Length: 87
Image 1: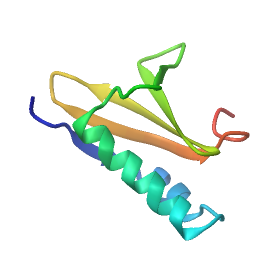
Image 2: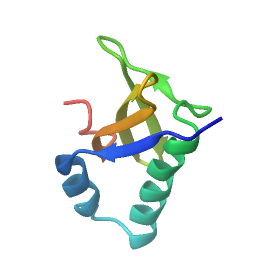
Image 3: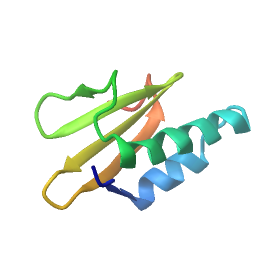
Image 4: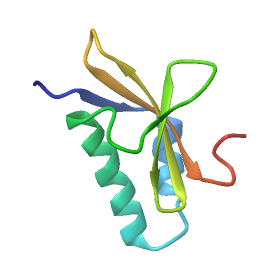
């Protein structure tokens, strides 16, 4: 199975850079995002209602993304703390 390309919106990159917790949390988020290229729907991901978006958890943070299977692309849309990401 070929891997998917992972594209990250500029706003999501800024959200990742703004993570105020430990540096290792930011590294774990980046690792989780890269992992979506190999497995775009990992165990524990949830499909969000109202569209073709998914979310995965990484500690207290959530990664919101979409999957385009025909083009084999994962687009990371939003990264944020669980209390703020859905607003």
